[in-house]
Image 1 (cartoon, helix red, strand yellow):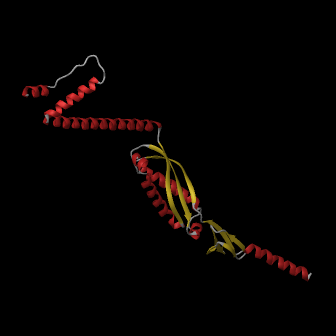
Image 2 (cartoon, one colour; image 1 turned 135 degrees about the horizontal axis):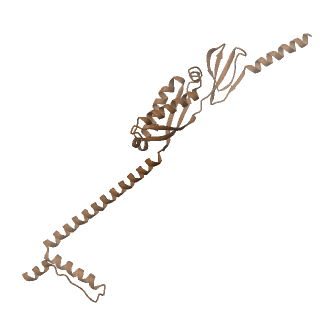
Image 3 (cartoon, rainbow, N blue to C red; image 1 turned 180 degrees about the vertical axis):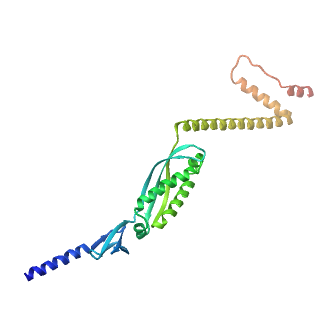
Length: 247
């Protein structure tokens, strides 16, 4: 009986010893409570807790990627759009993540959704389409400020896609086409203006030199004769007739 008694005690001690062992991975921390009071965070590696008196919650310190589902938002200029984004955050203080908020993942997700809707609603459509980097930084700062008291650090926010209504896409396509046509007309007009200026400069040079005009006329005759035409019409500039009168 005595032997069985000792064996029983040893078995109970062994069970208590095994139950007190805790192993925490490199990317985790164990937040320990003793009789309901916070002791602190331990890890990584192997450590011991007091059976029955201590309880532990593991917190992952790796970066979490939260995909914000599409949010239907009315922009500042009254255009309804659907916007989705991705939020990157991680736990920097495991004790606050456990004690300051009931579920830090759910709470961070809700703040990310509401902040995305709020910021997009304060911006105009052109700003949402062309200034995403600016909006990303603004959203990231607001979410980070709200979650810092929970031991959460928001490292980045990226707006992934902006979905426009079908009628708005048609209007924007028409606007883009009109803009391309306007630029084409401007480029064509600038080309004609530059060509006219060059012709003006050439005419001024020819007007200053009588021989230059005659040489230009002979060059034109040479180009026409090279075509082997049976009939050649030779226009004679008035300036050349005046040159012949002088001679």
